[in-house]
Image 1 (cartoon, helix red, strand yellow):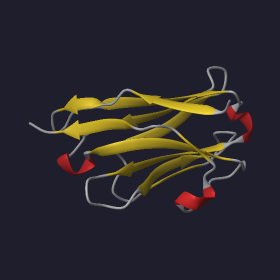
Image 2: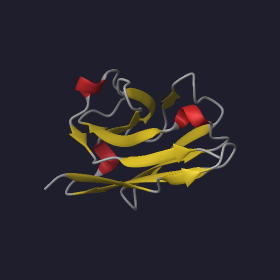
Image 3: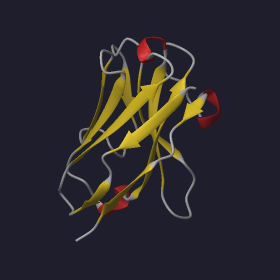
Length: 124
């Protein structure tokens, strides 16, 4: 059974950091691009970042560039999202998703498998 499980969310003060993990089981991430998405209350789900299957290509939403870093460890079959200098507007449920292609896709519909999400709350 193909499964993605996110972890690492929580409550953090503005300016703080968190590292989210996305662990895959039932398939290998060697052949999948992985995206991180987030959805805040009352807002649409948006893509935050993506990494190609090789890890050689990454991209970021303008709102997180310079603050978030995506990486992957194929040996652990896990993708990470390091989030620094967090802001209250980063508060959302964060999801990872796998795309059955080696390169990153655009919209939500281009991703085939989704995790259950992890809550990130940035508040003082």
